[in-house]
Structure formats: structure tokens, C-alpha cells
Length: 290
Image (cartoon, rainbow, N blue to C red; front, top):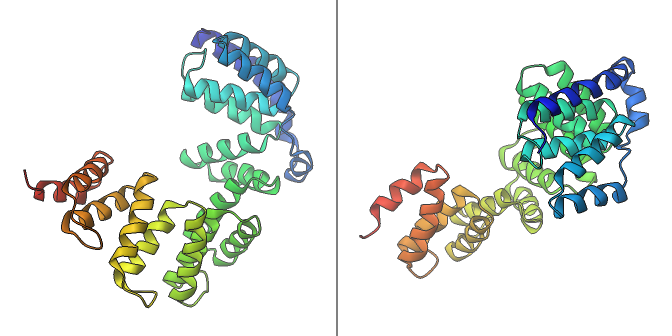
């Protein structure tokens, strides 16, 4: 296993080669949009990892990074995040992602942008997020959407959402449903349209959308109050790990709402939700018969 000191020295050595890229304009970055890491090269490193030869995988990616592969930097970042053959280090992973972003790997740009935002460097985050978005990274598009929406930049947020919808992104369908549900982004509140888009997102396995459909059935917002349908959708979201849906589903089967009462089933899901920090789940667990 590589020591932290060795990895640190290697990354700082590589960073000297990456620094010159900072002088290029964002328009030039958009032209690049290249990970410079082939599927075949990834397969070689993956094979090393599968054979428990992680040092070979890291060394191979280090060599590719020296040749200017942004994707190799990102691969190294993944290894550092997970501790595959190197000592786990979020700091060094962050450095590797940053260097990958300087060679225009879209995923590295996206990850570095999130890190800059988290540390309060919004301009740097915007620079990289916009670059990743212009390279077609849908996650970066949604990241910018969320930030613009929170900042009250409705026009820009709406434009970004439309771009994500054009790429058929499930999370964008959920966000559009929310906009119709709450009357945001210049849309009038329209719960029929909201339900339609929640359903589209739910078909794409977005658990928050499934939970929203269930809530619509509980409250009858779509014109139909149906506890059986609510139980079904809460269960679907709960099976995907959505804590609030685990709690709602657990409460419904605990009380026989929309389904036959099942204390064991209720306890199972309420316990899972409580472990994930849902306070209501803990309250309901205390109400279960001993």
C-alpha cells in the first residue's frame, strides 16, 4: 500500500504539470471536454484491483496522469476516497479531483466544483460547474439549477431545468413536479400537472417522487383519496431507502391504513428509519405493542 507521504509527494509533483491549465479560458475548456481515459485503460486498472494488485492500478493511473489524463486523476481520487491500495485521504482525493478538473475531465470538474462550494469558494465552484455543465455533465446542470433557484435567479434556474429535462434526467422531472406543486419558477400551482411529473419521475425510480405520489393519494390532491395506493407508493420508496417513506409506510401498516395491520412489518421499517435519524419513526416505535 502506498503511504500518505508517497501519495502526497506524487500528487504535488503532478500538480505542477496541471497548473498551467488554469490560464486557459472557460471557452477553451468547453472545447476540450475530454477525460483522455479510454475504456480499455479503465479495464486494465479495474483488472489490477480485482486481482488485489491495487499498487499496480494506482501506478498505472499515475503514469497516465503524468501524460495529461484528467480521467486518470479522477480514478486516483476514487482510490483515495475509498482507500483502495492507498491510505484513505479526503484531502488528497480533493487534490486529485482538482487536478483532473484542470485537464477537463467533466466528472472531476463537477466534484471539484462541489468541493469549492462546500468550502465557500463560490466563484471557483461556478467556473468549474459551468465548465462541467457545458461539457454535458447533467449532475453539474442540476447543481447549478439548485444554486440558482436558492439564490432567486428564477430565469436561469428555469433554463437549467429545461436543459436537464431535455436530457430526460429523472431528478429534473421531480424538480419540475415540485415547481408545479408549489407554484415556483414562474409556474402557477397545478397539482394535476405536478402529479403527472411526479409519476414520470417515480417510473424512473426517484424515491422522493414515489413518496410525493403517496402523499397526494393520502391527501387526495390529485382528486382521489386512496390509502391503498398510498401504502403501495410509500412501500416502493421505502424499499429504495427513503427514510420518510419508511416511517409513513411503517405507520400505515402499524395502524392498518390501506393495508392489513402488520406489526412485524411496521417494526422493521420504523427501526430502519429511526436508525437513519427520522425522529417520527422513533416516536411510532415507542407506540408499538411490546
